[in-house]
Image (cartoon, rainbow, N blue to C red; front, side):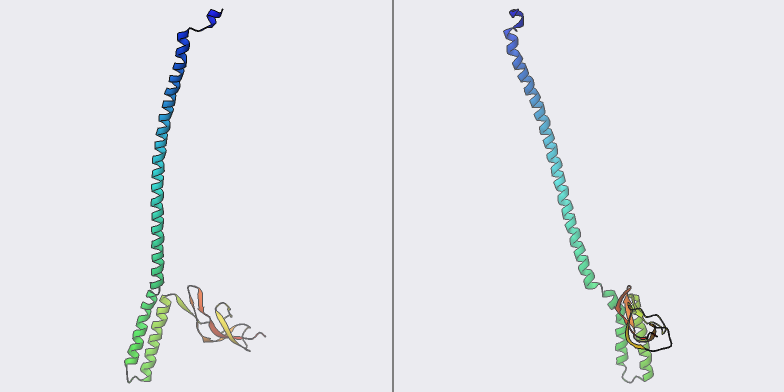
Length: 183
């Protein structure tokens, strides 16, 4: 029985070699696969790093362009407004150049210049606040200078002492008004 249980010496010597060779082949295949995967990941990493650097440079350029645009808007934002006021300045210069102007000519020139100024303001969204007598007092647009007794309803405008102005729904200066006293 002991003869059948023993393996021949030639077989026992080659079995560990075959196992070792199979393990070496498997390790070699696994190493090649891992090296390929590593090369693929390195290429992908390099590509992502390049994309990141490009995106970062693009964001920096966009930020720089935005800063330039804001700077130019601050410098030249009033350009349109100034251009619309130039005819008003020209009219005033022309009026002052007339040495022997009559009061009628001065009045007509002042009226025309005021129309030009009003037009220039309106083109630039600067609108006058000039409430009519009897209009309801609005503390957001009006500033009451005095309160007087009157026959009108309480807290209504009696007279406008100075026009106010708004620009794009924001009050630049409230209208100075006289209002009625509560009864």
